[in-house]
Length: 208
Image 1 (cartoon, rainbow, N blue to C red):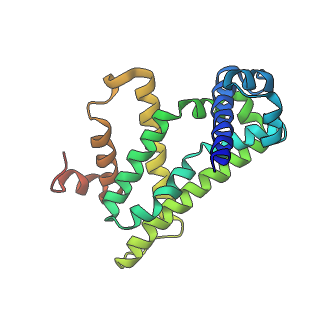
Image 2: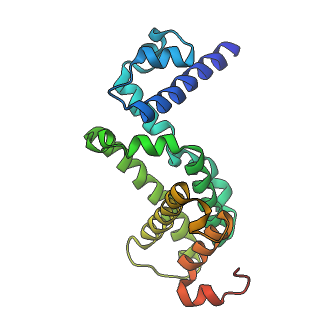
């Protein structure tokens, strides 16, 4: 068991180091030798676990995505009222962005945008996020007798996720000066706006 744990730890360390160096130096400028040296493992271990540097890159892209965090919490969110479930989703996404800024730098870097394979993988992961979130909304609204147009729940989740991403990017660049609300208040108000609309969310009891 200890051996398996040790192998998992080494593999995780390689992934974390590769993400850091790929985002800082670029994929093409980073060598497997540098990754091995930085995380304190033999270079051959990288090839043993991942095959080559490009496969390591694709593993990094899928391993650190927010989709993995959604899967971990999906069952828990299903037990919450819709508004609270969406708030918890939004707060976890914002936390993910703060903790994985290297991941954002990597997938939105010019090299990765031009890389068709990576771009397809990122798009697939984004679609999965929208599908899971859309299902979460669609089931609740359908159960309440609400009829939506085709794709509406997925569009709603895309709006929520993209709004939080823009909020995070502005905060990262300009700090608190661009937003008077704290993170949780912002996310909860955004969720109310999404669910109830501009007029209704402004007058909803309990809104900050």
